[in-house]
Length: 481
Image (cartoon, rainbow, N blue to C red):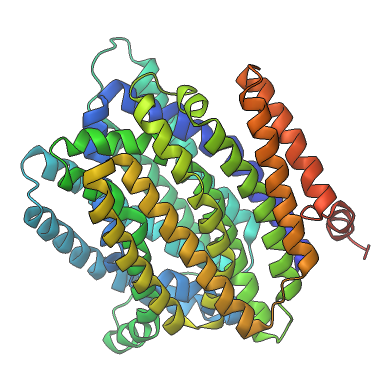
């Protein structure tokens, strides 16, 4: 299983590193420049609002389905045929809930028009994720990896023409960006549906009230978990927009740094998507999850700590790679926010393990605590520190959640942290921070700084055991080990 994990992790990382960074920094960031920071900030706040009630679209079905199909692949046709029909009804409930929330928050006019497009996009995205859960659950990881980048490839093509290919250049309405997403997501959903129909031996959508209620009862704990996590991950932009007089501007400033974090977190999300079906099948078969968990954690810490150190010490340089306005405000916020990446990716490992085991009660209690902590910190810090306050709230919450999940998973599965491993992580972090501090005052070009820090990270990860090169080579080559 560790060999399967490594090979498919390599595939999904290569595909996504080739496509998604260009989309986020080449397309998404250019849209913000063309549309304006305030206009994009309003879009970002509305997008965050659609995420807050996103659970109404899914009610935990996707996560439940990934685990269930991994253990009972032969039931794909029966379940997909019934669930697709139920999800159409959930989409209507979701749309009604979003517009009611928007009206209560004071959104009107053109804001509601844009929100309508974003609601449609969320329906399509949620459908894609559900269809992919069938493909990943049946252990077809290569197909799932290709689907994970298809929508972005299409969106890059559409937006590249809108931004640079038109004969007459002019203002770029933010609505164009939203409609381009609709086209890309719609096409990807059709492709995913055809693949699922092929693997399931055909689909016959049907409405069965008893079946739907049975599925919803089983998926409800997953739904509650996603809802609570959405609140402590997505409230920042909405609260910036609503708590401050010029909230849309501050939400746009926060979005500059959050865009980098979101690009990185996509890799963590893909890691969780790979681990969930693996953990589910291993737990059903009674296999020891400690070796896979240890390997995943070492790789995650090696990458996230290096990324966080670069983002913290060179936040201004990172912001200026893409932006020319408001970098003096977005850089301090990003220097804090980037540390939440370490916590989020750690949670993607241990939270996924607990999800695969079905321990949703504990996860929901932790997530509820995280939501209360995040909202409380935002209420306290945003009026005083604006975007920087939101960054502190997010980072503290993510690190606290990661620590709590590590403790719970370690107790349940007898995962033991060796003193050598803890000292290795400490030494690795210290080496990176010392190198970054020295390079900070060296006056070297940023490209050279990145190269030297990358070399220091690779050497440090090897020396401290975070990157066990020999073991990775043995696992990656069939017939060895």
